[in-house]
Image 1 (tube, rainbow, N blue to C red):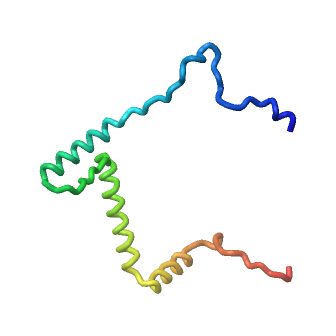
Image 2 (tube, rainbow, N blue to C red):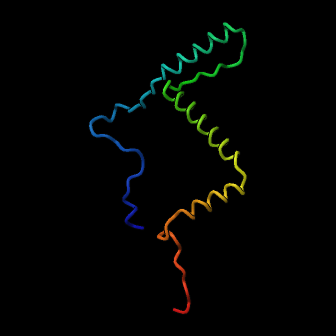
Image 3 (cartoon, rainbow, N blue to C red):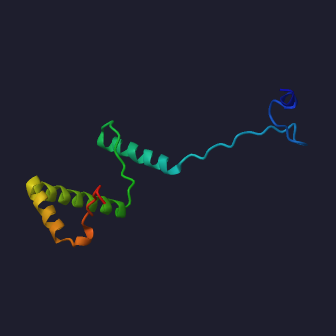
Length: 112
C-alpha cells in the first residue's frame, strides 16, 4: 500500500495557465429541429387544434422502399395462406423425390 501513498489526488493543473479556468464548450442547437417545431406550431395555429403534427423525415427513396417491402410482405402472406399443411408436405416430398442420390443421408450401422 505504500506505493499508492505518493499518488496525487485532485484535478490536473496546467503549467503557465493556472489563473485561466477551462470552461465547457456549449453545444450548438439543432437548427433543423427548431425549424420543424416552427412548422408544427404554424400548422396547429392554422388548424386551430392543439395536437402535435407528425413530420415524416424519410426520403422519397425510403418511402418507395417501404411501400415495396409492404407489398412483398402481403404477397408472401397470401402465398403461404393459399396452401394447406397437407399440400405443403406433398410439395416438399415431390421436391425431395426430384433430388439426386447425392443428397441422400448415408445409412449408419453399428455392425461395420
